[in-house]
Image (tube, rainbow, N blue to C red; front, side, top):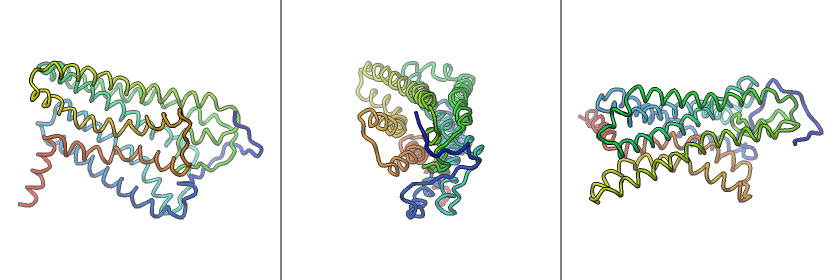
Length: 314
């Protein structure tokens, strides 16, 4: 229950604080966030273009990678430009409607990315358990259905967020201590009973990240079981190496969420400004690093990139 001595009605405009307490350093913070944005856009756009142009890469694993890159570009595009506006031009005001839009799209793209990582785990499971039927099981129709299911789940899970937020009528302040409109950041400045909103926030985590992580772990448990049934150590290493890039991306994507949940369970609380910086980074670092991981660890992608640079130097 959140009570307020001095309350205000639902404001038409919110003010995004950026990184509270570190306003004088906003200019410095803008540099790494801008670089993250540029690297993420260029890297993911390169991945999508390579897969689009190279017909030999039109197979399930790479088509799912193209989907991941497209979602990564959307995710950084809805976060970073607004953040840079705050850091560079002190453009902190955001309309209530725009705030609701942002609180829907940012977590939606994050949930989509989690769903694609689950689809990629299923792809690796099929490739190792049913190698001879791999292409027939994961044909184009199945991939389209998986993409639509990922999109539908994100829309179904996140649509209530702006609807519930719009029903909040009384607020403690119109200042959101964040660099973007996060659902719980808006809820925490509201007055009255917010238990329903907290329950909904937990439901989103369980129904998306929790669900996906459980089935990814299950998939890799079955993959390990299949790999260790192979008698040759060389064949085992070759089979498991096809999962290396995906495992790196999974660790990078889910570890901040797991650590955050564990920290809250154990009663550890970060300083507010450090918490905001961390939240920004676990949204933005994976989209920046994913293309680098797949470019370095995936043989086909690495060879294609080297071929492009070789042609340019000739």
